Image (spheres, rainbow, N blue to C red):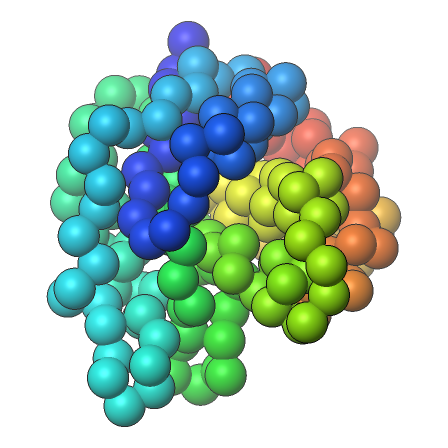
Length: 174
């Protein structure tokens, strides 16, 4: 069975990571583990923007890839992410590659001044983790009712399901 390793960085609670790992294991045919050592994000910091460059984080994650057939590494980063052409990103992935990254920062209701809601944060995190991992399996954005539908904001994340549509599910490795 291929492995999915969650590599973390930033202020994330162990309980959140364990719940996310369990939820991912119910959807993907991977053994999901949480890595013990956190990722050093300092090479990805952009002081002018006050954010972390997600592409640089992907490069760090891809370097640590195990090479095990079908295995993936997912960076779960408790910091705000960006790419130069956008204000922020929820995540980024190497299309057809071994690594993806996402941040729950802008998925949290508290980011928008709303009360803390652990269940909503976990559901949004699951959707964005699956979305980015879908890209690592070669999936593109999907126009259907699918986790691969693009999301520009947290409300759009809420509208999509935490599952792949039939067409995208068929394209996933067994």
